[in-house]
Length: 175
Image (cartoon, rainbow, N blue to C red):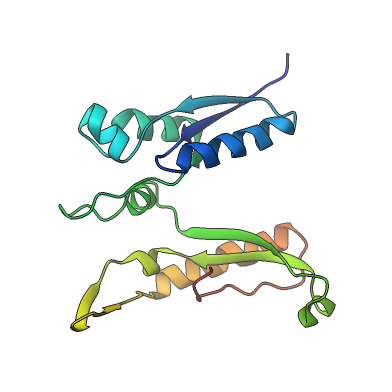
């Protein structure tokens, strides 16, 4: 009997379910066995449970330690910043970790063909904003020694585990 991985699935809303269904098909095509625990978040969850992030959803994430989440509508106003920010804070998620590959025809391709980018994302979503002049809003990114050290340590430890020769943690936003 082969084992399977339990994964909390948050389909999201709008285009979310379509994106998540495609991701699920790709993951299942690998031959790895998954057990999906599906939960609503955002507007759909609020309609059903009067909560944007139901307790059952967070309990599932605590149990599975893995989540696959599609785009979720964030309520505007009312003091709720974002489903993503709320989940990041609740589970102390700090690393935005993305693989990348450089196009073979790029001038930089000679030096390096692929890698990973590690970025500390909490400071980008601090929510500290103010209107400088009508129609112009300034948003502040908070950078702390603790957060910078934590993401640097994460990136260097990953590089060491993967036998990479160097690591360059990024403080710039990724697109």
